[in-house]
Amino acid sequence: MASRSIAPPATAREELTPVDGLAQLAFVIHRLLERRAAEHDLSIIQTRLLGVLRDRTPTMNELAQLLDLDKSSITGLVDRAERRGLVTRVPSPTDRRSLQVSLTDDGRSLISQASTRFQADISILLDPLPPSDRDGLASLISRVLVAHAAHHGVDLFTTTDARAH
Amino acid sequence: MASRSIAPPATAREELTPVDGLAQLAFVIHRLLERRAAEHDLSIIQTRLLGVLRDRTPTMNELAQLLDLDKSSITGLVDRAERRGLVTRVPSPTDRRSLQVSLTDDGRSLISQASTRFQADISILLDPLPPSDRDGLASLISRVLVAHAAHHGVDLFTTTDARAH
DNA sequence: TATTGTTATACTCTATAACTATA
DNA sequence: TATAGTTATAGAGTATAACAATA
Image (tube, rainbow over all chains, first blue to last red; front, top):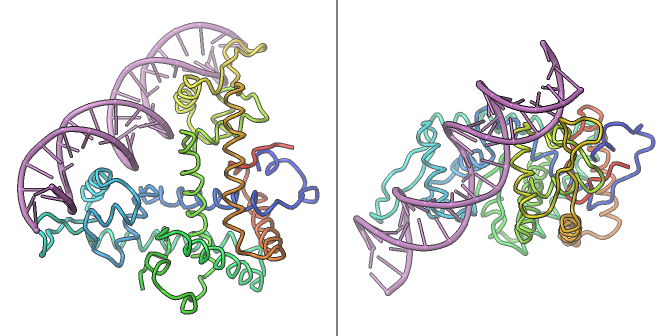
């Protein structure tokens, strides 16, 4: 991309290889989400935390697995979110060592707003494609993700979708 | 994704919406690159720094624009890379306030190795698609990126491709 | 003994504001 | 005055290692 995305006329733009295209697309989307999250004073990881909590009440430990972070990192992450009133720690009823983390109403409201924005952003990104091509793209991407998930375990992110059903 | 990407049988897996698919794909790729970079003791931003320098010798200021960071952040970024012997600061011949940053041989060698790995990773990700579908995907993605670049300015990342030609 | 979570510590990455040395 | 770069400072985010409480 680099200056290739600034100066050259569209007609001179050769088609990207699948590999380059995917890498670049991933970064465009990542930054899109990053900037949008920042408008809500959220980092990507805070957004993921709230996203994961939309349909779960995991322990600190489970959170570490879901987000693929060390448990000591989760402590600070949840601390900061709790300080803002977005999540709470509740003692586990079954294991007195454990804490369960859940969204507060404020947290749920915030992640809901942010999700809506993300959806809109990505929709806009796809606007230039006619509907049939959007479907084609979705189909191809689904196949890639399904195959990837089959090889690896959880790899959720799901800014826009963290549901477990 | 979440448990949806683990448990359910492939036949029961509904197709993702374009929006969800794209968001998830972006994160899968981002983490792929992040982990691969970590094997070389590189962060994403260090990787981007080296990537950008493959075909440029920007000043600190230009680097700030290219990477979309504050110039004070560039100081530390380049400090750490320089300490590892990956880049060097060279006084500008035309402006005695300026420094030009360039890759060392070690830096060039490292980013070259990392790029090769990234390319391979993404290739593997695309493996499940037959070649004709890979082409179709590339074409759709190219159109999305071209349209996006037309609206916005630079949005380079280009782990795998930071060339300016 | 093993597990859950926190703390202590250290490092990277980032920004804002103030500074220096040029221009 | 304005620009290029650094420094001082502060904070998020991450990991490793050591610890307390509980299982």
